[in-house]
Length: 392
Image 1 (cartoon, rainbow, N blue to C red):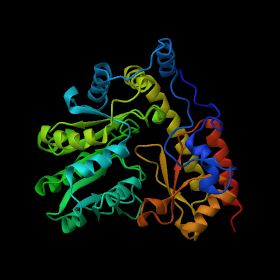
Image 2: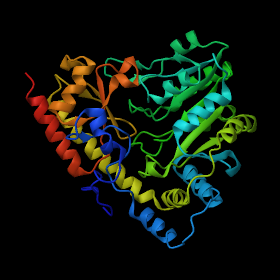
Image 3: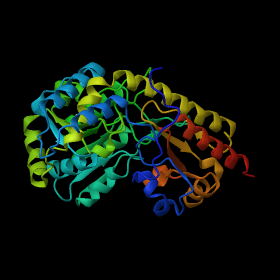
């Protein structure tokens, strides 16, 4: 192995969000923060070297997003996901959440409906209500084994002429599904029939574990591509969230112009000098690092699985097909959501994301981010082991 994920740099004094907000979120600093979806794994050394080289130039004025960055992303998407975008179809964005908000404004009017498939990343439904649209809740189905699928029948029964947009999370945060082609095709059929635009958040698309394979929604067919807005980026894959850089891919020129009207009014600008360098380096040199990262993440996930098997009368866990987020079913512990959160903070010393924050379907769950060094993961699992073992 070329890269070492056993330890990572200390982040307590680096203004890292997940550490800085511990007191505010958990009431104490003495917790391991495993909530927000960034990594306690160092950003790859080849990216750091590229940044150092750029810092040798003493001017950091305004920049346009370089064509070379877009081309690096285009080649990455073609090689890794079998889809080809043209440069003219790509727009810079500082975050997926910003892109979601722009899409809601661009493709719906106040009072119209936006489909959200819960449990899901909270900004999905919060953004809808923030813009005075109606959330059309289409909860995922969960079978007796705990595996989630789309509820297409429910969607068909609810969708109407006021429904304008579907927010698709693919791979899914927090349940960890990597949707199969036939699952996505059923969603596409419904959206095509009802003239619904699909915003596909595919920010976790590189973090998929074999034999699963990410299927870009826009890659299903030319017809589907024509109704799709895709959010892409390096923030999750290469731990570059602090550079605030991602892209939006829109092939349909009419949709792109509608989106760009909102986009230009907000003034998204073109990102930062170092963000451009980091993104190009990630897509150009990141293949080997990503493969080794995924091996490491699976080892962490297995550590967590071992604890859940040991205490299967209290907690259960299906290893995610993608992402580095564990969706823990804690319903057997017999706690309410407030008590469950308190258990993880005060008895296990872990700062996790409460499942209820992902909608009512997340009640009884907790989300744990296992994208950490081996050292941190072992500490977290020791703490969880002791806390579960001490339960009566």
